[in-house]
Amino acid sequence: MNKAIRHALALAISLAFSAGAIAQSLSPAEYKSARGDIAAEYKNALAACASMAGTAKTQCTAEAKSKRKVARAELEARQKPATASTSKKEQAQEYVDDSVITAKVKTAVFEDASLKSAEINVETHKGIVQLSGFVRSRADINRAVQVARGVKGVTSVKNDMIVKGQQ
Image 1 (tube, rainbow, N blue to C red):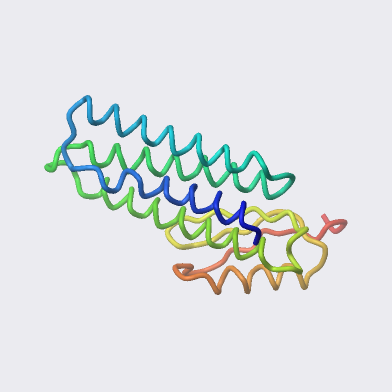
Image 2: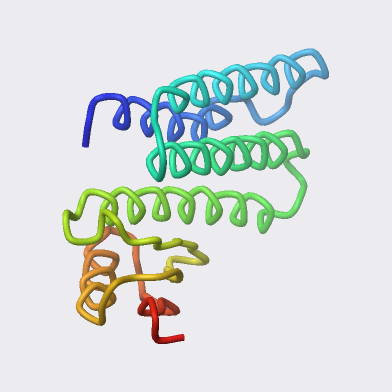
């Protein structure tokens, strides 16, 4: 993976955790400032993606958007009073965990030489990874599933990939 992609992924992942350091109860000014920080980090992540091309750029931009969404959800969860349901906090944490898993799986698939040209989409919910898209062969499907299963935090993999020309 080249230096620009690593830098962009690091920036995108940092968005997911930027809201994590914010105190439980925020004043309106602090909340607005935190939202501004998230927006600035997102803008920096997109700037890092701008120098890329093709699939790498698309993936980088999608990662940045996902991480911004996670950071906002985390901020919203922290803005709620301490008496609010812990299930909201747990949902935000699950979302962060799922986003991190998704980013790791996408990176692992992209770094695998045999899968680099594949059009594989990755979604995660509660540790269950869903792979979809188009690949060249059944061997590519098997390899993508194997790569996804090798990522820490993945509990199972659902395969919805299609071999090109065999719809």
